[in-house]
Amino acid sequence: MKQTIFSIQDLKKYYLVKLGLFKKAYIKAVDDVNFLIREGEAYCIVGESGSGKTTVTKMLLGLELPTEGKIEFLGKDLSKLLSDARSAKDFRKNVQAVFQDPFSSLNPRKTVKDILEKPFKVHNEKIEMETTERLLEEVGLIPPKEFLKRYSHQLSGGQRQRVCIARALALKPKVVILDEPTAALDVTIKAQILNLLIDLKEKYNLTYIIISHELPLLKSIADKISVMYAGKIVEEGAAERIFNNPKHPYTLGLLESIPPPDPKSAKTKTLPTLEGEPPSPVNPPKGCRFHPRCPYKFDLCDKIEPEKVEIYSEHYVSCHLFNRK
Image 1 (cartoon, rainbow, N blue to C red):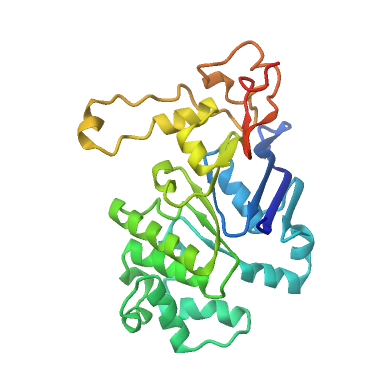
Image 2: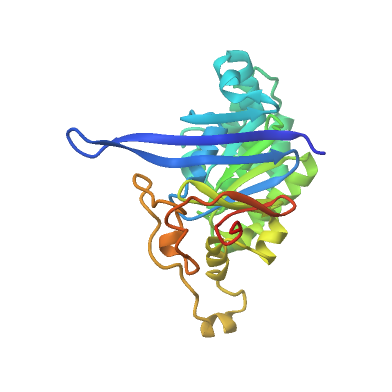
């Protein structure tokens, strides 16, 4: 059994908002989420905008504190790790992030050399020119000496994202969290960055947590997938099973909306769409949160929240279609 890197238990994140002079409410961004991430996995969290997937990663990075629930990193309570300066610094070293927009992730006043040296300076580790050159070579920026002198505005979008990846790998972390790492890139560059991530994962036995709404790109890299909707995980399982045999109506809708790769068939195919809009996180529907948009709903769906059911080994679904007795 592989080592458990992150254990997430009953995780909730609510934000207090004012609706008027005297009225207040809570945005239920993440509401009772549970999952495990094991060593060497590429764990992918997918869903529409506003589903809560980015909020989950902020809590995993320690950038947001949970309202309720518990996050364990290597068996230790993350909140306790972050409360101690030494253990917090060690956590930051082992858990790195690559964000969606590489341009805003890089300091425009610093050269690539300065950017890559910064993690070593923060953690008081020795840095040599050979190390920064090696990092650039590993992410495909060759010749490295040429790129070390450049500023972020002198790089293309794909080159900036490669620098962000090199910076994340500088201290040899255990986990890299990637929030929509290819969303801001051209189609051809997406494939290059994805292949790079696959190669680096195998080389360093990295654990990836990937946030994405681009389901086709996940086929080649994902080991496990969690599908989030309105702050909850509605389906979780091995990537191969999710792609080949999805069970939750929302997962089916996401997969059916993917255009076919063949341009000829794409012209003749009418893509199905999920009717309606995602619910308000301030006032989510009672019962199953997906029921207002679900084509398979019945009288129980708007009354009782579905329980999490294991339909195959480590394949879980929260849907009344699978827990009716």
